[in-house]
Length: 204
Image (cartoon, rainbow, N blue to C red):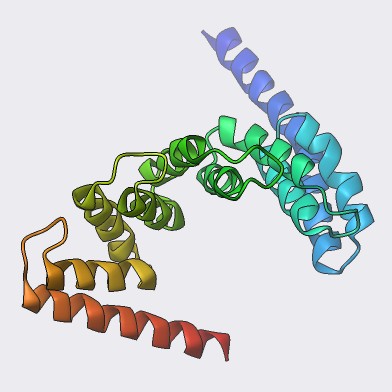
């Protein structure tokens, strides 16, 4: 029994030691990026991303997407977002959904946009919940469904998305996807205004 315990501790120790360079490289890359040293950031992120580090993959998606220290390359951006999205990263699933919706770095495909938005939305990504609601509202990549629009916008509204809060207020006012309720409409419209005001104050 003691031998098993010692073996387990040894394995855990080796695992933690092997992860230390990964964490160090990621931190160094993030520090370099914040300082505007994008080439060093890439130097740190690329090997980590190739090893499957989701955070490094997300960073590379962002860097290539905006062209920081490299030529802007939407195909490479979507490539790294896809790698992270496949590993279950809600933020990258949301970003990949947006790339399919706009046709940046990939062929425009509303159905795939919905697929990735939904993946992220189900994992609680507020922005994805809002965008998925819009897809149902406009019938893009899915059948138009005001009830599903309300459902996803309500989930985003509860998390504090001002756009979703406005949408929920309007839905209650007009009875779109939900029973008409002017009291709820007023509540969510005010909530949206409060959220926007707080966002403005936080920027100052």
